[in-house]
Amino acid sequence: MSDCRSVAILGAGMAGAAVARRLADAGLAVQVFDKGRTVGGRMATRRDGTLQFDHGAQFMRAHGPAFEKRLEDWAGRGIAAPWAGAGRRIGIPDMTAPVRDLLTGLSVASRITIARIARTGSAWYVETASNAVHGPFDAVAITFPAPQGRALLDRSGYALPGIERAAYAPCWSLMVAAENGVTQALIEPRADPIALIAADASKPGRPPGSRLTIHATADWSRNHLEDAQDAVAAALLPAAEYHLGLALRPSYVEAHRWRYAQVEHPLGRANLYDPTLRLGAAGDWCLGARIEAAYDSGSVLATAILADFGGPV
Image (cartoon, rainbow, N blue to C red; front, top):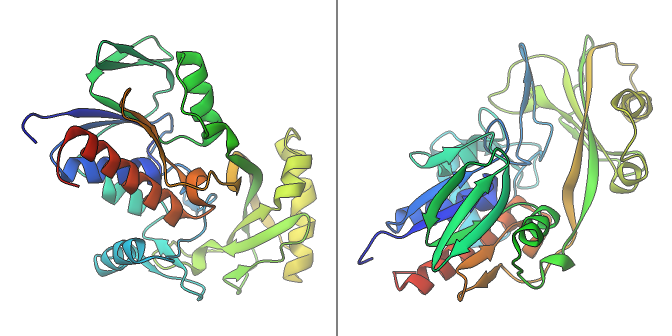
């Protein structure tokens, strides 16, 4: 690059991390913004005292060579490991680890909610919910779930046609610590109300103990989306016990609602990018309900930005 271009990347999940890493490695200045307490998006880990739960995405799998190469690199450096067969890998020591690795050495601002984006001439500025303004930037990459990305664009007076076509299913996630042990690493009933039950301590690099993450099905979660956490727990716990064949003696129970959990209707293309505005969007909503899809989408968006800037792709 003849001069150092700068890009604002909104969202620090797998897609945002893939965009940021690719652009930074090509010599661009990147600034990542995320509203969460930490990076990872739906590759999330909840901690409460000594308890630890992967309460979002449970594992990664590769279908194509690019992500397989990345998984092998993480495995070689102790950042990922196999779990529960069938090509599944998990992050070590938690599911945020692969995203944190991609963002190593980059500028990441957490706990920041982006209210709008604005363009003055050829320069982009990012305004937060607390009225702070960051910029200028030469380009903006939005990597939120599609409904949140569309809402930001609407508030800002811009559009990326097609983003409205992507749709998500919600998911209620229940975290349970029990006095009695569960030996099976992963159970996937996929029958209302239980989609899967994962034993967190069965994953490499996790603390010992009997801890379960229980995901509700999409239909059940949609029908109970606005229920109170206690009501969700009261419904999911006995249903999980039925599939486990075990009466749990829980010492800790907490429900978490993922409003945008799993892509149901992907866009069908790798990303959206407007070279006139130098504004793009990426995420698993572009290609499908997989962590790999988020990684591939972010990587392709980064390639489009580099090509637009006239740099190496």
